[in-house]
Amino acid sequence: MSKDVFKKYYIEEKDKLNKKLTEFNKQLVIEDNKLLKENLEYFSNLNSDGKLVRGCLVNLGYYLLKDNREYSNDLALAYEVFQTAILVHDDIIDRDTLRRGKDTIHYANYKSYSRYSKDLDEVTNLSNSIALCMGDYGLYSANKIISSAYAKDKNLARVLNCFNDTVLNTIRGELLDVILPFYSKNTKLDNNTLTESIMNIYRLKTAHYTIIGPLSVGLILAGASDKKINELAKFALKIGIAFQIQDDILGIYSDQIGKVIGSDIKEFKQTILYAYIENTEYKDELLKYYGKNKLDARTIEKVRELFEISGALNYSTDMMNKYYDEAKEILDNISWITKDKKEILEGFVDYLKERNK
Image (cartoon, rainbow, N blue to C red; front, side):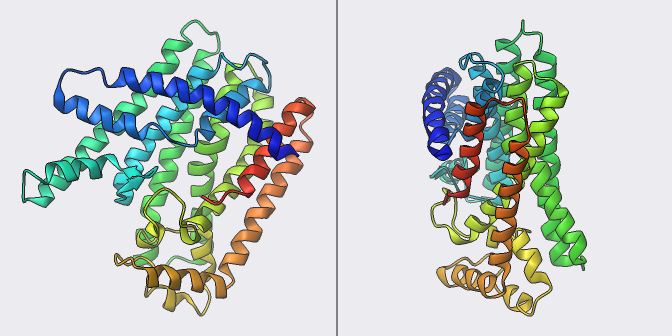
């Protein structure tokens, strides 16, 4: 089965990448100043125990053209550090307290500094400010890893350009993701505008950051032509959209997502699930629970029930499967990828379809 082929590849690459991350994290916390060291340790702790799928995709992008699976490891490492940095910022925006089963950086600081002051607004501002700095630190650390490791590589400029485009697209998507819930809650958005904005978030944020970016930077490091990069990007875009729809479904229905259960409900997150229910008789009932700060088991269960009986869950699941199927069709028509490596990509699609967190 293709899925088993991908899992074998993934396990091998993840093991190598974990070793690289461990080395990087140790070097990261070599610091005499106690206050600085404490937060570098927070970042180092968060920068471990991830799935490392994106880093493995960097190596897979490189491997599609080159058989040396070691050369792209530093680029894969940089991508994982970038991901951690983005998550630090994301957790501030979402006001989440849990990430990868651990305290988020802003929350760890909040718990630490609230022991010294009763002014909780001051402590919140301090904690968020520290976490912003740490997220920035991670972003520039990722750039430094790339520029140092590949200083003599003829493809360095193209790699950095693609990497930074990925960061910029991710931020553009995040901006939409931040602004859209406010507009949706406080103004009258027609359903077409809402759906179009949600799909833009899926393309800019998830597809570029999770699939297109890592595969593309790996391909560029291997010296791929623009034509090959664009062909694979069409495949990756379909997967990225499917992945985000699936993530939105899991954000409501899974209890194993590694962050606060029901946080999408609290954040009034705009998803295809929500867009579907906008024009149904269930919208008013949903708004009694969706976007409310009070999160309890009853609220979560009620939202789950409404998405299900309205047809939003089935609609979103069908759309997800459609995009995954279209990705496979595109892959079948890419002639320059050898059969054995195409099987890894096919297995990746199947692996994603079956995830539950």
